[in-house]
Length: 590
Image (cartoon, rainbow, N blue to C red; front, side):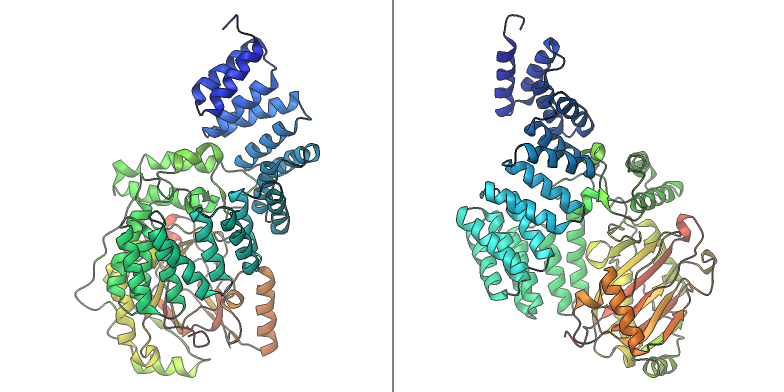
């Protein structure tokens, strides 16, 4: 290479880079840097190869050094902003992108990245403006169009999002992803007939998206109160792609809606295996695999250690502990424990096959005998429910001891606590994703038969569990989308440091019938204030039900309620676990 001019070396390296031969391009850039260690372009491009290969730390150093050499180069500053965004250094990324756009305002890709930065910072209006700038410069920028549409839907302007996407479909008639997004935007805008037609068109014309379109159509038909049509469509989705977890879940939802919980659970388990099996990467771009929180990582490490200490799949699970610990150590120290953030950039690619997946599921079969305590005083419980508030009572000793122990073992051992998107830091497990062992299904079906005077003909519609860190808060005030709410606790009483708290706080007022679910079931601070003001204006009475193991609160699901203050002992086995089962539909929305 000694006789080749430096500019020719750079040109050859750039050509190899553009052709996708990253190894040859990197070698060429290094040859240039061997002659001129301060060559900004070679340093810049070598840094971008590192970015493309997921070595974000190296990319930040190299592109940053290039920016120091050429501080007024808009292209280098724009790519530095991109790399800083990937490293989750949002303030620095915004500063670099702002400088890049001040020097070169017609950089469409820089505007797009700036929009992603503002979106992650929670500045939705600024993000929308950035993506509009991107499309003004590059109307065919599909990622910006999809991002803008999602932002507009989140901003409550789904109809405008549909217009943006329709324009994109006209520009790119064969772009199936834009077509699918248009159907989803139409659905969110309330144009359900148009949305259904859009999904049908995609299902008929696209082999690749047939299963996805049919899945969306099944969900839409279920929301339109057409359970039979939803069921048929979901079965077609499963036939189109037997390995699609969303199709399996849609079929489970359709069966559940018809009251066939046993069959629904089978399909939920299948969808769970398809999505959460360790080692696969097919769906690893989803937020649940790409984001985490300090509270989530601490929980998973504690659970893995709990399993290894008890020699439960120890040979397979023990190597995961240091991998999770490395993720925790790489978390920015300034991030609050419960705040969800992207996985640390240097570990994100390697974590795709193991993070937030089902590494162990404890077998928990149905019992031959009863799960519900047969000694319960059913008439007294029923009378208490109907005499307090608009439906409220609590029951001690709900489960038979063996059933309680088995259920607690399932919750402690099964690695199904995937939901961490709560700023209060608690973990969630749901019917559709692993929280549906045969014992739970038996319990959900047996309870209405045990207390017919409370449940009537209501069937189980949802099951979930939450597991709480001893140092973080619980769920804020809300009501649930159901007729009857069942909430019970399985953590031993000795774990609770304050026997008069740790349970549930309820108010004897129902959510107004004209409030939407987004109004009565949200943890937005402004809406929380509105709920408090409503309860004060109504003169609502507050009732505190303290935590007790095997205590169950049964209440009208329209009642506002929240988790009581939590003061539990440290230690994995002392975490507060509550299980919730919802029956029927909220009368105002049924």
